[in-house]
Amino acid sequence: MKRFDYYQPQSLKEAYSLMEKAAGSAKFIAGGTDILWRIKQKAVEPDALISLRGIEGLKGIHDNGGLSLGGMTLFRDVERHSGIARDYPALMQAASMLANPQIRNMATIGGNLCNAAPSADAAPPLLVVDAVLVLEGPGGRREVSIEHFFKGPGQTAMDKTEVLTQIKIPMVEPHAGSAFLKVGRLKQDIAVVNAAALVVMKGNLCTKCRLALGAVAPVPLRLKSVEKAVEGQEIGPALLERAGEMAAKEVKPISDVRSTEEYRRAMSRVLAKEAIKRAVMSAR
Ligand SMILES: Cc1cc2nc3c(=O)[nH]c(=O)nc-3n(C[C@H](O)[C@H](O)[C@H](O)COP(=O)(O)OP(=O)(O)OC[C@H]3O[C@@H](n4cnc5c(N)ncnc54)[C@H](O)[C@@H]3O)c2cc1C
Image 1 (tube, rainbow, N blue to C red):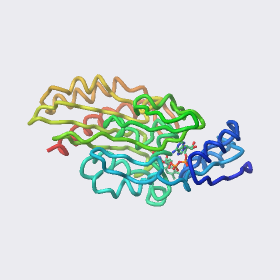
Image 2: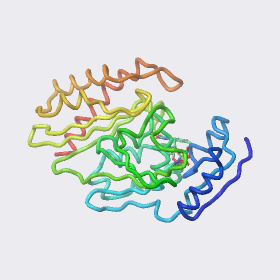
Image 3: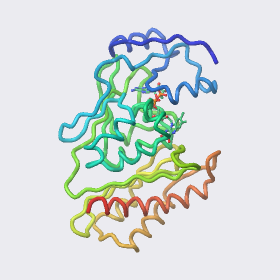
Image 4: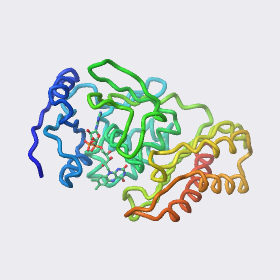
């Protein structure tokens, strides 16, 4: 493993200035569960790691009508938050299925998004709630909708010097429900396919539908044609079947070490259908 310097700044300002001095040869580190593994694999070889752990205010979950999660919030804290379990079940389910307790005690939600793996478990539940990401850097503060954040495997809309400081989730709508599902080679493994659905119900009528799938395209994907087909309809077995078929057509999976394109497509159909069904049950 290549030697690197390690810095632990106490403020964002200090972190930006260390990053600017490194002129592109440094990386931020949060929980380290992904980046240290990539350094060991020689997939990245930074000259320095700049830790975000010592910076005040990047951690924690605040209820302000909606929710605000610090970029350094641990999955263990997301999993145990009673407000998330009540109002955003898909996010709680995703957190509790990520890896194992040891990883969840280290891994951060910001690291999961910035890593930009197409299989990132936090992405689908945040896509279905239209989360907004707050990015701060030497040039100031800006907000990017999560839908426009992912640009490709390992690629995001962030500049190298920016930090993901906050994830803003809008207030939950009345009669909303959501669900997250995941298929992996082993329980709690990185997803072969994952899916989150959110519905708002008026009696049996679905007035709003959001569906997002991961590990089936270069970026976590909103399936807008399925959403459109479900909205304004009463949800029953035939519609769910159609939603699954549409999802299987819309995804663009690849074959890799974890799975084949065919299996991912077949699982997209099952998970899309089942996630919508469970979201409806959660809304009731
Ligand atoms: C055994 C194992 C199992 C895993 N299982 C899963 C799984 O089931 N599901 C899943 O989705 N992932 C899984 N992962 C991947 C990883 O644990 C997660 O993606 C985790 O959330 C990464 O967070 P971290 O805080 O450890 O990020 P780090 O490794 O510290 O950082 C990841 C990347 O994001 C950047 N970064 C981190 N935080 C910020 C920030 N706030 N602002 C700007 N840049 C930032 C870093 O520079 C780095 O490039 C697994 C990893 C391991 C080792």
